[in-house]
Amino acid sequence: MSKIFKMLCLTLSLSFAAFSHADDEPLKVGFVYVSSTGEAGWTYTHDEARLNLEKVFGDKIKTTFIENVAEGPDAERVITQLAQSGHKLIFTTSFGYMNPTLKVAKHFPNVKFEHATGYKRSKNVGTYFDRIYEARYLTGVVAGYMSKSNVLGYIGAFPIPEVVRGINAFTLGARSVNPDIKVKVVWVNTWFDPAKEREAANSLIDQKADVITFHTDSPAAVQAAENAGIYAVAYHSDMSAYGPTAQLTAAIHNWHGFYEKQVKAVMDGTWKSGDVWEGLASGMTKIAPLNKAVPKKVADEVKALSDKIVAGTFHPFTGPIKDQSGKLILKAGEVMQDGALLGMDYYVEGVDGKLK
Image 1 (cartoon, rainbow, N blue to C red):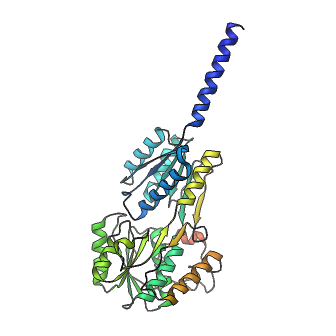
Image 2: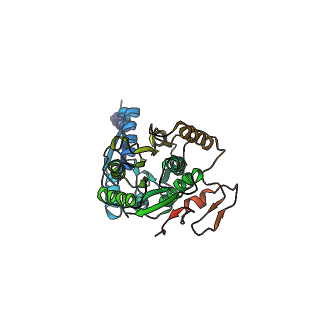
């Protein structure tokens, strides 16, 4: 055997070994969180799904999460660090991470990115969210039945379509069973600030709201309701531990199946950028068990409505729907299209207050 041939064989052998070793390396998956993981709320639901990935895929993956990342320059820095450190799939889980994600993705074309709640995509950036408005509608039905004052309170994070859509869905659900319902909204302009959320909850309670809900991250509103002896509808996750008497139910996100699917797609080379928006039918959205204080007939009605949504025979945004001023937005029997839902910038009839 010639010296040149031996060197060639050695080179091929080393190359093959290096390739095999690289192939055996676990897929590094990164997560960027806007708040702490905690024991409830938005970030908690994403982290529960991350932990589920570790159970499902074992040593085939390695996950990293970075919490309490502010939207803006901090997010861009953190996302860049994850990409530079070998993470091949990165989930950025807050609306304000949208532009930083797209900016970083341009510099790392071989990294796959998934952005929660966003609407901008590129070749290596996909978007995802759940049709939580379906659960919001159902929880509104429960609140409408359980309210005695006919005043419901709603704490909003930021006046963006996602939040406005939730307010409107909740209102439509409540007024479908109690046309006298008014929904009062207080904006806190933050995703996570327990002190502000509690202050907003107390303000709504002072305005005679006897059921409060929210689009923020902490269980502060549920705790305030428990202390005040009124009801609450939780959001993001089941928060009954913080208000066992107060919580009527909760509108919940479930990211487990979606995260499993995206990891598998990256592993087998089939991942493609897209927009995922699924709801009750896929299990991406659900509601928490109802409080024992909720009458059986109400529970049965909620179950029947949920079944209709799953079957596609009922849509929460079905006309007639009017805005605050009484203007007809959707004719009787018409179903609102996704484009209109995604761009929602008005309150429906029954919401008390101005949209900032």
